[in-house]
Length: 283
Ligand SMILES: Nc1ncnc2c1ncn2[C@@H]1O[C@H](COP(=O)(O)OP(=O)(O)OP(=O)(O)O)[C@@H](O)[C@H]1O
Ligand SMILES: [Mg+2]
Image (cartoon, rainbow, N blue to C red; front, side, top):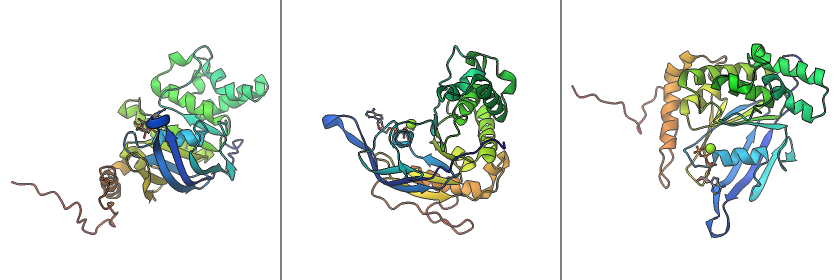
């Protein structure tokens, strides 16, 4: 899409800790995170339930204030929410009394754009997510997958530096979810904004990401930074490739890793994996 000009979108986190709760019940949800994300990178945050993934995303969105450390986007400290850092949750936030088109155009209305221009851009966004024929519908007239597509368009119309996604396909059935993953990659191929995508689904992370940051159980720390070089465009056949299975096994071992034990290391594909010897089937 030629008129789409994404801003850079580099993230820097230094010694980032986030405390939640109050008084004697306060605890560190994430602890001393050091990381950098390049502009345009597609990063998945993978970790067990309760490890602090949503907390970290909340800090990136500016909804939560870190208790220590620094968090900046393109060199500017994150201080409060901004349309420059758009968030997509598991459930959409479309306004039920506005048409799909007006929902998508809403961000531009907030910026003071005129009706004709904001509707033109909203139509462009709906085309990008494959919903141009549904512009005049109410959100309740869309399927779950279509609602999430409209939600993505609603966020992208602000040309965000960061697209933050918290298990955005978690409520969808398996087939719709797979289609949405491919669609998201197609969208990202044309707009190349930085994506931080939270999931606890290993297949989803491996299918989507350039890079997976794996978190330990609470308090969340990064225990792996996995760079994936599967060719793009990615299609379903990737899920059954030996490389994919190999990395999946490694991610599984990381998610099952217990505190105090040595962290599982990624062995090169083809070398014997001493931690996970091949299964023997008794005949
Ligand atoms: N407002 C809050 N006050 C107190 N504790 C909270 C609050 N929000 C979350 N928690 C706790 O903080 C920890 C981190 O929560 P968070 O929602 O970030 O985890 P998560 O990795 O996103 O989990 P899930 O995969 O289940 O969504 C959890 O143990 C959770 O119970
Ligand atoms: Mg969560």
